[in-house]
Image (cartoon, rainbow, N blue to C red; front, side):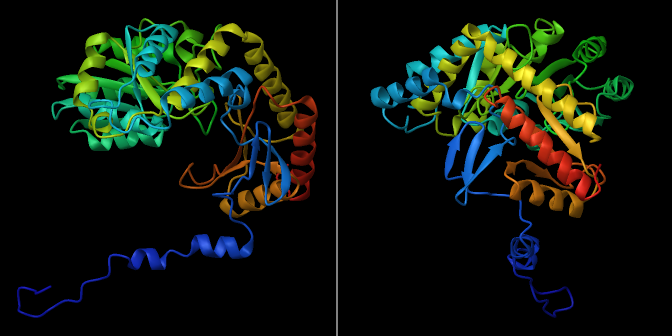
Length: 404
């Protein structure tokens, strides 16, 4: 590239940062790489990795429906009936009757007028937030919202403000500072995936309405788990009618892949006609749609599955806390064990993995520095023998390496 003085500078190679990145290679060579572990057999609470059987406590398969006979059967029947793919976007040729049937079921399930299905949960948040916000609008988000919400905000033209996690006074101050906006959207998670705590939705709703702000809740980790009938965080707090938009994913309790947004029919229609993430992406395949439909039916007709999940959750959480681990403010089947620095967290994860426990290793910046943790998630299909073994190994290893 020529400078103003006529001399030339040497341009750097675009890939130089890629070649300089060696942390993954170093961790693999040292035997402490916790990511992209290839599973050769997936059977609910047990998996096989490198020929070894491990207890899976790192999955979001809360209700264990990925292996439920009714859910498996529905997926196979849809595959036989419709084939493997819709081969197009929903906007063009990719809409089939199963999509519309599922959207009607989802809207009824979460208590809204209409719903729109997207091909992934990440894409849902991107595809909803970006088209709703213009340059004269403001979005106010909790600092710990999911990365997909952050990306949706970045793709929009609206102003963004962040409030301290679950801090209503901080929310109020940000809403006051947004008073000159044409429109305001407040976005929170129902259940926070790293902490396992719940958004205080009644207080968030009341405060937001003072400023005429619309409210969107990402309930990815609440649907199927919380509420008297498993309808999520809104049902749990009794604010279904007060929240404007509810978003959910299918890759957790609903045993599939994809996501949805539900709300007022005219709002959903606007989103489906303006969302680039929807219009320019291939539609959910038939087997994935049928899986969700069957999972929703199981949630409504077999409440004992959710009861078992909560029994397992209380057992593990109470015993992990009794052993001396710090679990933070969790109120859900997400049970973190906070360690506090990258190296000790990696070492703890490796020891647990070697002992036959598959957990999630969460390092900075996935969580703030000093909050690095091992993240466990409960499933309804865990047996008491599974959980007793998890508690025993975590306790023994935690003591050996000085975490507890």
